[in-house]
Length: 95
Image (cartoon, rainbow, N blue to C red; front, side, top):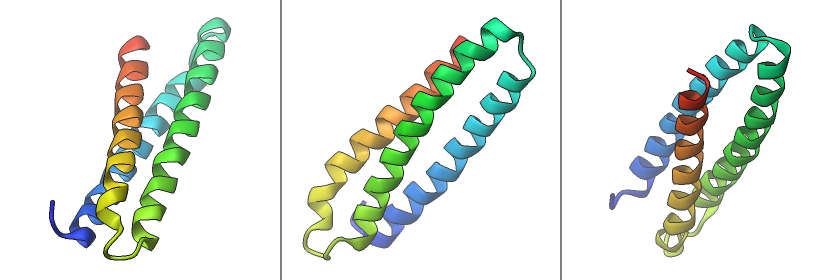
């Protein structure tokens, strides 16, 4: 995607989607039995860390100079892939 603002907007929208998925997992965890709740807690904490990392990468992109943002895309995309994959893994694990 060539347009910086479009790329940032796309990532911000995706972050909101992932936040909603994490919220659903949190709600499910709160309704689960003690043993499962403990497993959810660990998984959710890992997701929160990965989510914070993805948000930091997004902030870096937002604050990057015009000539530097392309270089930051790779790290940002990796953080997003890690977060997306982790959310899917946790969601699948606790179906």
